[in-house]
Length: 434
Image (cartoon, rainbow, N blue to C red):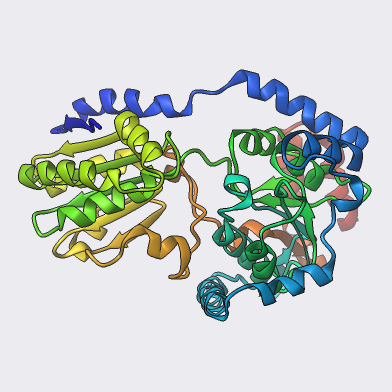
């Protein structure tokens, strides 16, 4: 299992690294065409299209009557979970909700002596659709995705939330997904996967009401469907394969660093795991640890392929140059595996989530700490942020100007309108001053 070894000393070295990593985002035009046809079919035929695709790809003999999961089945799933697992889920939900509660924005107003009132009104969207991947035929349910997507919408004040997830071959949904929905007090769960589920949430069907914002991870078909719907509905983001960068010094434990790199590599053959360090001995030790640990992983083949194609150990002259490279990489996840990570934090401009020190491994953020794990990938963190309450809100400007305001400023507004050749705009203001 070779892991690419690179050297970065100045920005002149960046072009080759960027050229290598940019190959992860090559578009698949065949998928575009397939997804476009799926969305059109769902828009035209609704439930019948969902049943057709679900029977073809997930559950033979699936019918439209099975699309909606009964509310009693959602509640009953809690009883199938060990009490200890339910308690862990409840604690994770509490922690994530507590973090997102601090993100909530309030409407605000300003007043002037002439009676003018200006402000911004913050309101949640009416309805949200959440996609939850089934995971290996429903046997590895992505319960953390449901938690991370539902909670910011709930904190925003969204009252209508629909969840879709592909059924298992027997037509059921993994009880952990249903139980998590019950703990989140969600009562709309539908059996549908891939691009047809995204189409159903966007357009609506006979069973599923259309949504205003869609969120949730998925494969290339899900991501492509979301990208094709931009402008018709809001989406969280078009996410690419997962990635982690680690900036480490000699105080880091190579066994821990290898484990952290593998935690991303096991996601997907396209996942990128990068170590940046000035310590060549540490780099060599991590490389050996990767070989040893990868052999013992249930998803070792996936991890090995990921490391072979997109894993990298990059040596730099010092930590300052390392931070420079990190900002160019703009990673989804960044670990600062340093003796004093807080000294370096101010140098980091581009990272989706930053994990501080030797005892903050990335999975802490995936499941339990509180911050959202839905993060920008493929360097888009340069201009975008983690999923938050704001993704499920919209803001309206409020303008209430008084007669005094119009009398004082009307001629200025009219002049600006005429400069743009918009006479009716000018007269709309001037008529109020006659």
